Amino acid sequence: MDMEIQPVSITETAAKEIRSIMQNKGIPEGYCLRVLAEGTSGCGGVRYRLGFDKPREGDQQYTTQGIPVLYQKRHMMFLIGLEIDFQERETERGFVFNRK
Image (tube, rainbow, N blue to C red; front, side, top):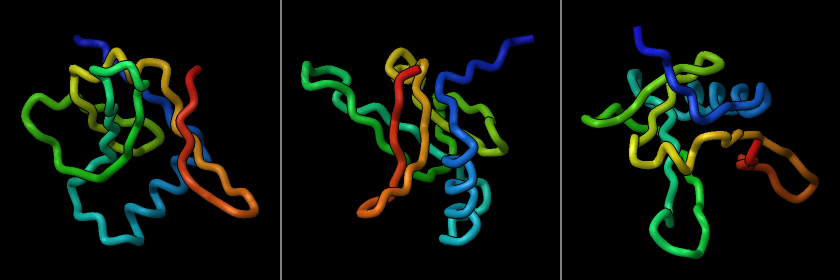
């Protein structure tokens, strides 16, 4: 049996926000949280993006905190050890990507 690889972790605060978005923003049934690593071929550093999407051929998928997560296998080396958090400050609120 293959061990399920979970390169990205999600804090409880972020998981609560993601579940809220999935329930309240009309995300279709069967869609998952997609984690993207952009800028992986240049020297400007990697940027991360989140979205909701259906699984596609070649995607890797796992579930954490009750949230189905998708990523492209070629991005795994950029995602390992990444933690998604959600922060609310006086002037802004949003998802934050931390390296563990």
